[in-house]
Length: 202
Image (cartoon, rainbow, N blue to C red; front, side, top):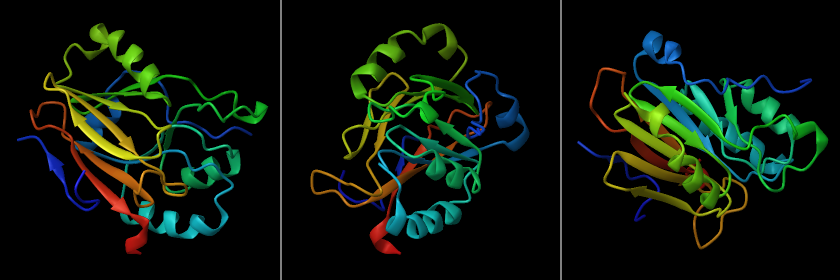
């Protein structure tokens, strides 16, 4: 990755999660779908909370996608006040209050099947088991966290692997950031468009 601002375009009291079904009703109603993707917030976020809130709100996202290791249900609840939440459980999400989070999440959005886990190795396994569900989807977007380093990989078979990095604990010399993904409507053949948004820019 050369720039956090460069677009990529190949052409409860649990928190009420947005779901883990593979139906496409939401995407049909909305057309294109925008996701704000983050991971490894390792909350409570405290000082970073307002800046992150501002970046997420500015993204005008349809969903917030959290790839695990939030460690804080109040943080997830705060994210859900901005947009519906899709989240998975990370290896640090051991608190009983977070036990309801799934280890693997799959959701059809527009022309893309979203598959998310926390660890990249688990994502590889999950993607191998999604062939039936991926039928009819033009693209598969695999999302993981755990590394705290933003990364975007196109595998060449319609599968895109995304790690959004971390907005609170970046590693590997990366900036605190999130990813914003725009997914095309179901009938379109355009690939998901991905950009990284740095919290240092606010």
